[in-house]
Image (cartoon, rainbow, N blue to C red):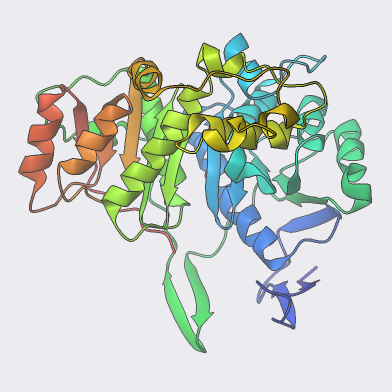
Length: 393
């Protein structure tokens, strides 16, 4: 197939819409549903991300995409009992395979943003993964293959309209890419920079020059995630998964703050006081996500007001105080941070430190590098200058 007609473009008024190949055939097959324009943008960006994560780590990988940026990305590291509960997979009766675990982590990083996501899997979608996907609000999934039973599970989702795409894992695009804006054609070489090598850690200007193997893995996950995130972007990673992604901000400090806030929320969801919230039976996962998010945040009174809390809880919870939040966040350590370009000032490091960052990989090259290095040294943070910019638009 050389061409696929789409329902419409980014918006319903943008017709006609299609995807097509000038040479050769389309490198994917639609097994169920009807993908839209934005669905395919998410699918192709997320597929590249998980394919590179698998190449860099050797581990099955998954991503959760929304509006052409990842809400989460992860490798299939085992889940603790705490994370199983936080990610709402503790009730799954069948064993979670590595690829299922990768998706649980990717979806669980920022469940609010992942609502209605497009999923990418580096490996064949199996029954365990399809079981997780079926119960979440999602637009579609792209993978190199599907087990027959898994495909049947997904084809039953959303009354058969759920989008299931099989990608040719061996497809390699042309080295030159093009797009049109305002009737003008842009052309550039594809960003085929290799982010798998140890050369990323050759230039370490900080006093602390020690990167653990897990830190190197997590920094590669951060950089590869940023390669497919709308710029400016910053990514916090811990234990094989992104825990906070700040995308598309005009100011880098705003990226760092946004991603740091998401990382803090991810960590606060694991606080015993939050995990033990007395939810009523029958409260849906999406409503729990929203309620927890508000409870953790500054507007916690919105869910604890009289007449409101009774909708969600069997009894009125005590607020999570500012002091309690600060104390719990301080327990989060060994977090990794990647940036898609240099940090212009040390204020980014100050904010990162508040969320437990111990390792950083960034391009370097700012006229204020000395200030950034000095701030890292103040907190004994190990930082590598990669010399690589990863803007994506």
